[in-house]
Length: 307
Image 1 (cartoon, rainbow, N blue to C red):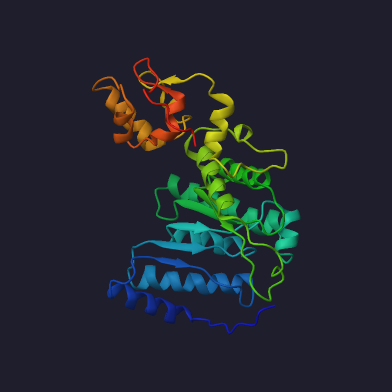
Image 2 (cartoon, helix red, strand yellow):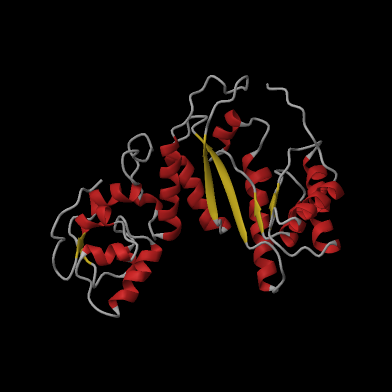
């Protein structure tokens, strides 16, 4: 293991340092995380003491993102939700089997997932009661360190969206660190990380179901095209008329996202869309969309390359 000198701030020291930076216009908000020293509850209590100093004694009303500590007491998790704008707990791996190899000292179901369930329940209660508190929950996964597939990762992400109201998942491509237990393992391709983000957007914002994602036989997404392009290649056999397609249909066309779909719907109320330059002006990536659309009954005059 790598030996590093560690520094620990006392709650008042950290709060004072943050306020000095804020007054100097160097920061607007706080993301507060910590290593576990010496145990989960003690660490969580110190973090909460920092936030309580800012919120209750200094009157700070700005953004605070608070990292939840796996295994911390449920009352401390509840207090963290009450005091912050966003909370997160990094699952790191999609299931216990992968976590056993990545971080054998961590327990997935209760220590980590169970705390996220509790945080979400507290968030829902605070909203019902009209009280301030965290309004979003996020997590992060390490990608490529222990042989997990995209299928495994996105199955857990889909479950988190459904059961936890997860705001979003973050993915971090593995990179070996010298003298660490995984130093001899190869770095993961950043393209894979990017494809996972794109697939999560499909689940979260584009109306796709998990079983529509284009996994190969090894449970991996394609690297040479976006997952939405791969889906369209296999499923959009007839072009869609831009002037009549529903928002849900528009979102399935490569190159069209939620914002550009809404712009198309607004533009159609003013008149018919007849060429790719109009779509481009609305934010569409026309080189991706062209093979799959009709404009006023016609394909584009020049078929652009699909990829």
